[in-house]
Every structure is written in C-alpha cells, then in structure tokens.
Image (cartoon, rainbow over all chains, first blue to last red; front, side, top):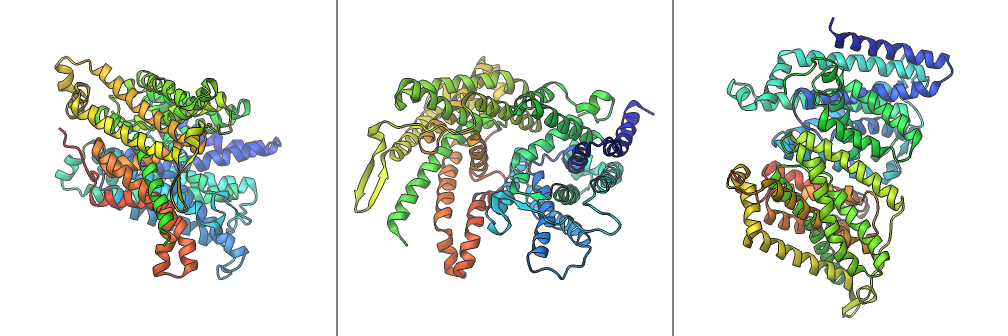
Length: 320
Length: 307
C-alpha cells in the first residue's frame, strides 16, 4: 500500500477509536469536536465532488448545509409548538429525507440556471443563490429571523438515540464513511470519468457526444443533497440553527477545507476539515484575533501548497 | 402613494447606486484588465472608512481627512497588489477567491485590532450637517446631496480618464490584449499596479463617503462587496458603462423594493400576506434580478467587446 493509503486507514481508525477514549477519560468536549469535524468532513466531501472532480467552483455550498439544518429545525418547531402531530414518532425518518430532498431540489433548480454560466460568473451566481437563501431565512420572523432557532428535540430514529453524544457521533461517523465511499465510487465510475473529462476540456467531451451539462447537473444535485444531509446532522448536533450557517464566509471555509486537504482526492476534504477544526479550536483559545493567523495561513496555502495536504503526502491528485 | 416619500427614496436609491458604482468600478477594472477576482475589494472600502474616521479626529476636519485618506487608500491597494495579487494572476479563479478570502480575514482582523470591535462615528462639519428644504415638508440632508454630487463627478472623471487620456487608452488596450500591450513596450506590471491602486482609491472613497452616515465598522466591506459583484455581473464584467447602469439600477431597485414592495404586493394579495412576504422578497430582490439576468444573458447586460 502506498503511504496515502496507510494515512487514510490511520485517520479513519483514529476517528473510530478516539471518541470512546475521550468519554472514558472524561473529556466529552473532544467528542463534540470530533462530531463537528466529521459533519464538516461530510459537507466538504460533498463539495469535493463538484469542486474537485467536476471543476465547478461553487461559492454557495453553505446554503445546502443550512437548508438541511432548517429541514430538521422547522418540523421540530412545528411538532412541539402546534401543527404537525401527523408525523409519526420517529420524526427523523421524515426530517432527514426531507433535508436531502429539499436540498436536492434546490440544487436542481439553481444548478440548472448556474450551469448555463462559466468561470467567474458561475462562482458569483452560486454565491448569489446562497445569499438569497440567507436573506430569505433572515427575514422570516416565525423561525427566529437572524437570531436563529433552537431545536428543542433532536430527530428521533429507531435504534439510535441522538441525544447520546457517542451514538450521535457514530451515526455521523458511519455517514462520513458512506459519503466517502459514495464520492469515491462516483469519481471512479464512468460517470465520474466524464465529469473529470469535462473539467479538463469541456469542448472535447461535448464533441465526443456527451451531454456534459446533464452530467454536471447530476453531480451538482448529488453534491447538494449530500451537503443537505450534513446540514441535517449539524442541526441535530448543535440543536441550534441560524442564517449565519449560510453566510458566504461559511462557503469560503468549506472551499478552504477542500483545497487545503487536496481537491479531487478521497480523503483530502476530511483532512482539510480536521486542520480547520484544529486551527479554529487551538487559535481561538489563545486569541480572539484567530482569524489573522487563519487568514495568513489561507494565503500561504494558496500561494505555496498547491495540491493541498494530500498533494504533499503523495501523488493523490491529477496533473492540474 | 406618498410622493414626497417616493422622491426621498429615489434620492436614496441614487445615492446607494453611486456608492455601489464607486466600489464596482474598481472591481470591474481589476477583473476586466487583470482577469483577477478580488474579494478583498470590500476590505479596502472598510479601511477607507476607518482611516477617514481616524484622520477626521486627528485633523479635526472631515474634508481634509478625506483628501489625505485617498492617497493612503491607493497605496494600500498597491500594497495588496504587490504582495498577494501579483503572484496569483497566472492562477485560476479558485485560487483568486481563496487567496483574497484570506486577505479579507487578515484585513478585517487588523482593523479589529487597531480600531476595536465597535463602530466609529464620523462627525461632519456644520455646513454639511444641515438640511436643504425643498418646500413644504420635503427636506434632504445636505451631506447626501454631496455624496450624490461626488459620485456623479467621480463617474464623469472616470469616464474621461478611461476614454480620453493616455492612461485610459493603455487601460483599455490592456483589457483587450495585455500581451500585445506588454510587447509594445508598456510596463504592464506598473499599469496593473496603477489600476489596482485606482480601484482601491475608488472603493476607499465610497467607504469615506458612507462613514458619516453609517459609522465605520468591521464587516461593512463584506456586505457591500457581494452587492458590488452582483452589480458587475449584471452589468457585464469588465464594462464600465455596464457597471454604471447596473449600479444605479441595483441601488434604485434595492431601495425602492425595501420601501414600497409591501404596497405593490398589497395590490394583488391580502395585507397580511403582503406584509409577511415583502421583507423576504425585497431582501432577495437583487439576487433574483441577477439570477434572471444570468439565466437570460449569461454574459451580463453590457458585455465588453474583447479578444
């Protein structure tokens, strides 16, 4: 096995072993940190599908995460405060598919428009749609407007108790493994090859007879749905949702995770999120000005570390 | 409808549009000529406001502070160009976005360290603090008139600069084919630096003009930069004319939407429905316009003729 395979294995095993150890050592705080890391890892992995493999620079990915979180928060709100008792006791069986479906639908509608554009126009229109969602939720007083909304009840699932930190963590961890496998399978499939071909040279793929627009749109919808799922987990984890989750700087952070870890690599986005969480956690302990070293590091990564962490570790990225 | 309120809001829309133009013109210059996406342009707007605020207290006069702050903003822009932008010109847009996102974090935090977390109000001299009565109950603050006048003058100056001077000729030439301009013996690096500095001065000027109304505050750049991007995308990236028309359009639509959309909605739906939906729609209005424009004309309304 190549070095990066060993590292992949080591990271995944560590993520499986450490949280129970933290609980045993009486440090539940680190379980929270690991949960956040794993959820962000899923969101970054979903972005990697379109950004890394598809070359589609989406600057509005946080909107999908936010939509997914609101898809958990709004039904929970109505269930507790009047209205939707119609939904059965395992409300998670309703909320999580809802999060996936709504974000997929949003991805389908916006993607159909965004993918008509290229280059910087694509960056900006994806961001514009995210801002639309952001301002939409900011102006809805019912759901807390910019103060956000506390989720008083986590999603109820059979066999799993999400109020238990460790069970919540392993639910997220299993989801992460699934997300990594899905993206990896897609990337190596015929579909993924066409997608990567269109990233390299769109005209050539079109000339070869592929309707690259449909391929990109499909990838965009899958990516959006997966990010929505991550949002549903995030809502369940933080039990608090607010439009701030969809701010454009959140989208920028997700891009940072993908690029830092290594775009178009299976594990890169997870590594990027790990570094992001560590930076945020460590630096914000020392100084309220932690954005300064974070920004400097971001600039340094862009200027000097092309190919990201996985690029540094070993050949993990195609030539571009 | 109240025609006095309508008139005042039209002036406010014009003012917002002109400020947007000041920010967007620099953005569209930099993108059109350098093919560089500069998210940090909004931070230069913020720094303009803060520097002007500090200088107003130091010099005791807002107008004097404005005059001194302008070249400082230009120098800052030149610095950003030399350190960050120049190594990234040859890279793709993704690297531009991430690199300048880093610059935003750095500049915002530096502003936080220097000026503190609270906003700084900028006092105006007495002669600018009054109101001009237009008859009856209709009155507009004289400072807002000054903003409008300055905005129009700067726009005119910019058109003159780009269309009728040697520098403007080089800028236009650089926009259509920079390799050729460099081959003809023009110092293209210097030209790029000047364009960046000019853009920073324009953004800084917008920040200085708005500071007495809204205070200088951290994050003020991050809200305007997104709107400025909407402006240049609706107008067609790289087009000065497009930026001007789109800025006025967006400024007007945004201001009018926030004031009158509930009245308009009230014509076709129940008052309660209009009252609840109008704020949401008016906040999203400019993004809806941008999406519609891009869906129908992916190159914007006035795409420049290049290459």
